[in-house]
Amino acid sequence: MAPTIAAVEATVVDKVPVKTALVSVYDKTGIEDLGKFLAAKGVHILSTGGTAAKLRELGCTVQDVADYTGSPEILDGRVKTLHPKVHGGLLAARGNEKHEAEMVQHGIRPIDLVIVNLYPFAQAVATGGDFAHCIENIDIGGPCMVRASAKNNAGVCIATSAAQYAGLMQQMNENDGCTTYDFRKNMAAAAYALTASYDSAVSSWLAGNVTSPPETHTIAFQVERPLKYGCNPHQLPAALCSVGGGKMPFSVVAGIPGYINLLDAINAWQLVYELAQATGKPAASSFKHVSPAGAAIGLPLTEDEKVVYEVKDKELSPVALAYVRARNADPMCSFGDFVAISHEVDLSTANILKIEVSDGIIAPGYTPEALEILKAKKGGKFIVLQADASYVPPDKEYRMVGGVGFMQKRNATIFTKDHLKQVKTKKAELPEAAQLDLILASVAIKYTQSNSVGYAKNGMMVGVGAGQQSRVDCVKLAGRKVSTWWLRFHPKVMGLKFKDGVKRQDRVNARVRYIEGDMAEAERAEWEKNFDSAPAALTAQEKDEFVAGLDGVAISSDAFFPFRDSIDHASKLGVKFVAQPGGSVADAEVIGACDTYGMTMAFTELRLFHH
Image 1 (cartoon, rainbow, N blue to C red):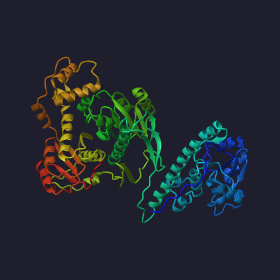
Image 2 (cartoon, rainbow, N blue to C red; image 1 turned 180 degrees about the vertical axis):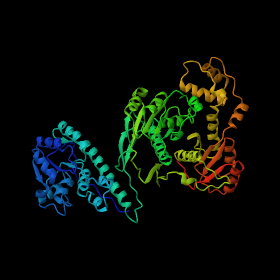
Image 3 (tube, one colour; image 1 turned 135 degrees about the vertical axis):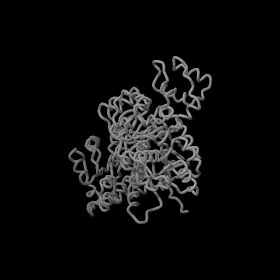
Image 4 (tube, one colour; image 1 turned 90 degrees about the horizontal axis):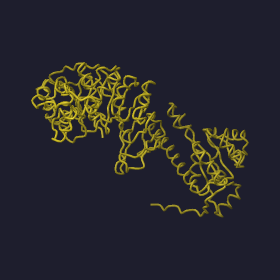
C-alpha cells in the first residue's frame, strides 16, 4: 500500500478576515443582498462573466478573473478559473513561509472567501436533455474551486448555496468581518457533501449510458426533513431524505410524519397507485407497520355491508367506497392506520375518515372541503401527504443492513389480467369479478411482508397473512381474518344491541371478540358492560355452519404453494379462485387439490416477495 501524504506546515488561526472573495455563481439567487453586504465590508471581489457584471451594478469592487490571471476565458467558457493564480490563492497554506514566498513570486492573491454554485446537471437530465447536452452541464471549474476551498478550510471559507448566505453574513457581522475556524469547517463539510452528491449524480447517469457500467455505485441522500426518531425513540438521529438530488415523491401538507408513518405511506401509495392502474378503479389501502391491514377498489356496497360497516346513512362516492372496504377488511388491525387513496380525496371520503381513528393519509390531491376536514382532524395533528402521481422512482433500490449494502432492480411489474392467462386446473372459468379480486390480492401481497397470502372478495381484501415462515401458516392466519370478516354478517353479530354511547371502535372490537369467543372471565365481565344485557354466545357450531356458506373467495400467494395443505385449508373458507407463481415440485399435487375442490387456479409466473 502506498504511503499517505504528510500534512503541509500551516498556521491555523480562529478568525480569518475576509479581504478577498471569489464569486462565480450559475444560480444568482440571493447574490444581490450578498453583493451589497460584501461591498459594504470593502471586500475585493474576483469574479467571472455575468456574475461580475451583476456585482458591479451593486457597487462592488470587482476584478475579472481573466484580468487577474492574465488568461482569457477559452473553449466556450469551459476554462475560466482553472489557473494557478486562482487555485494557488485557494490552496496556499497560511503561515507557511515557502507558500507565501511562492505567492509573492507569482503574483498570487490569497482568497479568503469563495461563493460558488454548480451547473444544473440534474436539471438537464430531468428535463430530458440528450447525451451531449447533459455532458455540457457537468461543471468542472466549480467543483475544483469548491474542493480546493474546503480542503484549505484553515484559511478559506466556502459557500455553495444561497441558503447559506444569511448565516455567512451573520458570521461576518458577529466577528468583525472574519470567519471562525469552526464555521469554516462546517461549511467545508457541507461543500464536500455537495460535490459528492454532484459526482454521484453524474456517475449514476453516465453508468446508465454505457455498455460496461462500473462496479462502484454511488448514491447521495439529502436530508429534507429531520424526524423525531427512527423506528424507536432511542434511534437518533433520523431523517427523511431525497435521493440523488431528485425531487420528493410527496409533500407534507399537514401534521408531522414519523419514520414508520412514512414507511407506511410510501408502500401504501405504491399499492393503490398500481391497483388503480391495473383495475381502472379508485383504490384505497389501510396500512399498519409496513403491511396492509386492508386494501380495496371502489365497488358498490350491499345493504348488509352498509349495516355491518356502519355506513348505512352516509353518502359514499367511489373513492369513499374504496376506503370503507379497505378499512373493513380487518377494522381492529386498521385502528390507527395510515391511509392511501389513488384518486383525489373528496368530501364524502373525508367525512368517513373524520370518524375513524387514523394517523394520516397520502393521496394525489384533495378537494378544498375535504382538506379542511382532514387538517382539523386530531386537533391538527392528522398527517396529510400529497403524492406526486407523475413521480417515477429510480430503477435501482439500495439499502444497508448491518454494515452491508444491497442493490436490486425495483419491482416495477404491474400485476394485470395478463398474469392470469395460464389456467392450470380443469375448471378454467375466471369471471370478471374473480379477476378483479385476484388482481387486488396480488397487488396487495406485493406490498406485504413475506411470506404472504391474501384473500379477496367483492373488490376488497378480507384476510391478509403477513410475515410467516411457513406458507400454510400465512394461509391459516389470513384465513382466521376471513372467518372473522364473514362472521360479522352473522345475524347474531349484526343483532348485537349496544348501550347508547359506546364508541365506534369499541363496537368494532366488541364484535370481533364476540366472534372469537375466547375471553377470560375478567375480560368477559368488561366486555358485557357494552350491553344492557349479556348477549347469548355465538357457538362453534353456529360459526362453522355460517362460514360453510362463504363462497367465491379468491386467494393469491406471493410464492408457490409447496404442498397441497394450503389449498385444503383455503377450501374451508369458500375459496374458488387461486393465483400463485407456480414452479414447485409439488405443482401437480396442488393442481390436483384445486381440481378436487372445484377451484380455478392460474400460474402467474411472478414471485412477489417483499422484505
